Length: 170
Image 1 (cartoon, helix red, strand yellow):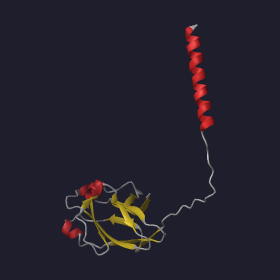
Image 2 (image 1 turned 90 degrees about the vertical axis):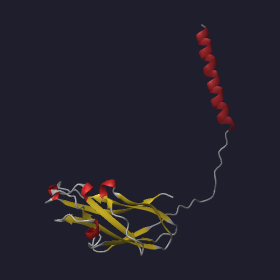
Image 3 (image 1 turned 30 degrees about the vertical axis):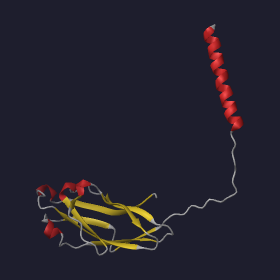
Image 4 (image 1 turned 180 degrees about the vertical axis):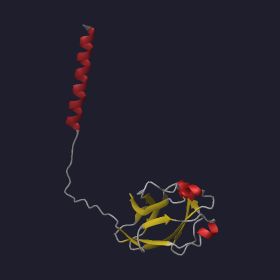
Protein backbone atom coordinates (compact mmCIF):
# COMPACT_ATOMS: atom_id res chain seq x y z
CA UNK A 1 0.00 0.00 0.00
CA UNK A 2 2.82 2.41 0.91
CA UNK A 3 4.58 1.67 -2.38
CA UNK A 4 1.48 2.65 -4.33
CA UNK A 5 1.13 5.91 -2.40
CA UNK A 6 4.82 6.79 -2.90
CA UNK A 7 4.60 6.02 -6.65
CA UNK A 8 1.46 8.17 -6.92
CA UNK A 9 3.19 11.08 -5.14
CA UNK A 10 6.29 10.82 -7.41
CA UNK A 11 4.02 10.69 -10.46
CA UNK A 12 2.09 13.79 -9.34
CA UNK A 13 5.31 15.71 -8.63
CA UNK A 14 6.65 14.86 -12.12
CA UNK A 15 3.44 16.04 -13.78
CA UNK A 16 3.39 19.23 -11.67
CA UNK A 17 7.02 20.04 -12.59
CA UNK A 18 6.34 19.49 -16.29
CA UNK A 19 3.21 21.66 -16.29
CA UNK A 20 4.93 24.39 -14.25
CA UNK A 21 7.86 24.52 -16.68
CA UNK A 22 5.50 24.70 -19.65
CA UNK A 23 3.39 27.39 -17.99
CA UNK A 24 6.34 29.67 -17.13
CA UNK A 25 8.25 29.18 -20.42
CA UNK A 26 7.95 31.88 -23.03
CA UNK A 27 8.89 31.59 -26.69
CA UNK A 28 9.53 34.70 -28.75
CA UNK A 29 9.37 34.80 -32.54
CA UNK A 30 11.55 37.27 -34.38
CA UNK A 31 10.96 39.14 -37.61
CA UNK A 32 14.65 39.43 -38.56
CA UNK A 33 15.96 37.52 -41.56
CA UNK A 34 18.98 35.29 -41.15
CA UNK A 35 21.69 35.44 -43.79
CA UNK A 36 24.14 32.56 -44.26
CA UNK A 37 27.35 33.44 -46.12
CA UNK A 38 29.77 30.86 -47.46
CA UNK A 39 33.25 31.10 -48.92
CA UNK A 40 33.81 29.73 -52.38
CA UNK A 41 37.04 28.10 -53.56
CA UNK A 42 38.16 27.91 -57.12
CA UNK A 43 40.81 25.26 -57.67
CA UNK A 44 42.85 25.26 -60.86
CA UNK A 45 45.15 22.43 -61.92
CA UNK A 46 47.89 22.68 -64.49
CA UNK A 47 47.47 19.68 -66.83
CA UNK A 48 45.24 17.40 -64.69
CA UNK A 49 44.43 16.79 -61.05
CA UNK A 50 45.68 13.19 -61.06
CA UNK A 51 49.21 12.27 -60.04
CA UNK A 52 50.62 9.03 -61.40
CA UNK A 53 53.79 7.26 -60.38
CA UNK A 54 54.06 4.63 -63.07
CA UNK A 55 57.28 2.88 -64.07
CA UNK A 56 59.06 5.10 -61.53
CA UNK A 57 62.51 4.17 -60.30
CA UNK A 58 63.72 4.54 -56.73
CA UNK A 59 65.81 7.65 -56.06
CA UNK A 60 67.45 9.68 -53.31
CA UNK A 61 65.76 12.73 -51.82
CA UNK A 62 68.18 14.98 -53.75
CA UNK A 63 67.18 13.28 -57.01
CA UNK A 64 63.49 13.43 -56.05
CA UNK A 65 63.75 17.17 -55.48
CA UNK A 66 64.99 17.51 -59.09
CA UNK A 67 61.92 15.81 -60.62
CA UNK A 68 59.16 17.64 -62.48
CA UNK A 69 56.69 19.45 -60.31
CA UNK A 70 52.95 19.22 -60.26
CA UNK A 71 51.24 22.64 -60.04
CA UNK A 72 47.85 23.76 -58.74
CA UNK A 73 46.33 26.91 -57.29
CA UNK A 74 43.50 27.71 -54.91
CA UNK A 75 41.58 30.99 -55.03
CA UNK A 76 38.98 32.27 -52.57
CA UNK A 77 36.29 33.80 -54.78
CA UNK A 78 33.79 34.10 -51.92
CA UNK A 79 33.14 37.04 -49.64
CA UNK A 80 34.54 35.63 -46.37
CA UNK A 81 37.92 34.27 -45.34
CA UNK A 82 37.98 30.50 -45.64
CA UNK A 83 39.87 27.59 -44.09
CA UNK A 84 40.91 24.57 -46.11
CA UNK A 85 42.89 21.33 -46.08
CA UNK A 86 44.86 19.73 -48.90
CA UNK A 87 45.18 15.98 -49.17
CA UNK A 88 45.28 13.00 -51.49
CA UNK A 89 42.53 10.61 -52.51
CA UNK A 90 43.98 7.36 -53.82
CA UNK A 91 42.73 5.89 -57.10
CA UNK A 92 43.20 2.19 -56.53
CA UNK A 93 42.05 1.23 -60.00
CA UNK A 94 44.18 -1.82 -60.67
CA UNK A 95 44.64 -3.22 -57.18
CA UNK A 96 48.35 -3.30 -58.05
CA UNK A 97 49.25 -0.18 -56.05
CA UNK A 98 52.62 0.86 -54.64
CA UNK A 99 52.59 0.88 -50.84
CA UNK A 100 52.60 4.45 -49.49
CA UNK A 101 55.63 3.65 -47.32
CA UNK A 102 57.75 3.82 -50.50
CA UNK A 103 56.54 7.26 -51.64
CA UNK A 104 57.87 10.65 -50.58
CA UNK A 105 56.68 14.15 -51.43
CA UNK A 106 57.70 17.76 -50.99
CA UNK A 107 55.39 20.75 -51.36
CA UNK A 108 56.03 24.45 -51.91
CA UNK A 109 53.58 27.30 -51.31
CA UNK A 110 53.92 30.38 -53.57
CA UNK A 111 57.52 31.63 -53.44
CA UNK A 112 58.27 29.86 -50.17
CA UNK A 113 60.72 27.04 -49.54
CA UNK A 114 60.17 23.40 -50.43
CA UNK A 115 59.08 21.36 -47.43
CA UNK A 116 61.44 18.68 -46.18
CA UNK A 117 60.67 15.35 -47.89
CA UNK A 118 57.84 13.48 -46.12
CA UNK A 119 56.72 9.87 -46.38
CA UNK A 120 53.20 9.54 -47.73
CA UNK A 121 52.59 6.75 -45.20
CA UNK A 122 52.56 9.47 -42.49
CA UNK A 123 49.14 10.53 -43.79
CA UNK A 124 47.27 11.57 -46.91
CA UNK A 125 46.57 15.06 -45.53
CA UNK A 126 49.50 17.27 -46.58
CA UNK A 127 48.29 20.72 -45.47
CA UNK A 128 45.87 21.33 -42.59
CA UNK A 129 43.83 24.32 -41.45
CA UNK A 130 45.15 26.84 -43.96
CA UNK A 131 43.39 30.22 -44.17
CA UNK A 132 42.79 31.96 -47.47
CA UNK A 133 41.55 35.54 -47.30
CA UNK A 134 38.82 36.88 -49.55
CA UNK A 135 40.03 37.46 -53.11
CA UNK A 136 43.43 35.86 -52.52
CA UNK A 137 45.06 33.09 -54.51
CA UNK A 138 47.80 30.69 -53.45
CA UNK A 139 49.93 28.59 -55.82
CA UNK A 140 51.33 25.20 -54.88
CA UNK A 141 54.00 23.01 -56.42
CA UNK A 142 54.34 19.35 -55.50
CA UNK A 143 57.00 16.72 -56.22
CA UNK A 144 56.60 12.98 -55.61
CA UNK A 145 59.04 10.10 -55.98
CA UNK A 146 59.86 6.55 -54.88
CA UNK A 147 62.30 6.31 -52.00
CA UNK A 148 65.76 4.91 -52.60
CA UNK A 149 65.06 1.97 -50.25
CA UNK A 150 62.12 0.70 -52.35
CA UNK A 151 62.59 -2.98 -53.06
CA UNK A 152 61.86 -4.96 -56.21
CA UNK A 153 58.28 -5.48 -54.99
CA UNK A 154 57.36 -2.05 -56.43
CA UNK A 155 58.22 -3.10 -59.98
CA UNK A 156 55.19 -3.12 -62.23
CA UNK A 157 53.05 -1.34 -59.64
CA UNK A 158 51.59 2.14 -59.84
CA UNK A 159 50.42 4.87 -57.52
CA UNK A 160 47.60 7.13 -58.67
CA UNK A 161 45.95 9.83 -56.57
CA UNK A 162 43.95 13.03 -56.87
CA UNK A 163 44.62 16.18 -54.93
CA UNK A 164 41.61 17.08 -52.80
CA UNK A 165 41.00 20.58 -51.45
CA UNK A 166 38.37 20.51 -48.73
CA UNK A 167 36.73 23.38 -46.91
CA UNK A 168 36.91 23.49 -43.11
CA UNK A 169 34.12 25.10 -41.07
CA UNK A 170 35.00 28.39 -39.40
